Image (cartoon, rainbow, N blue to C red; front, top):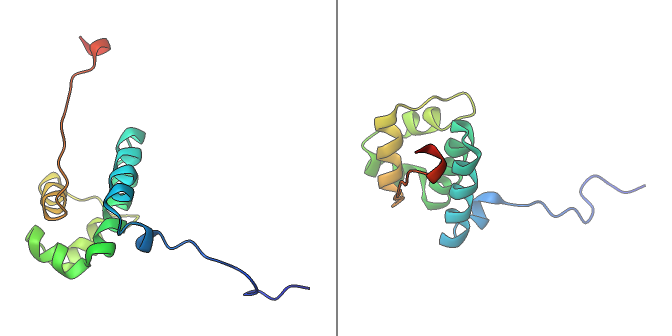
Length: 101
């Protein structure tokens, strides 16, 4: 019988998200899902990879507000979300899809 911790390798999303390419892909997947919780989770993983304290400071919010807003039950305001995105260097380019016209 195998012990609980034998040969178990856990995936560390925060460590993986230190790569800008992974951060970009994570945000694109979350955005394309169209789910605010997925976007908030992606931002939380990236903020943890870069440092929650510095992200909160750059976003102009408290660290507690950052944790709360990006939690699974959080519902960040648009201004907080934009502040967090700016603090993380995230930019967005919007386009109107051809089928929406």
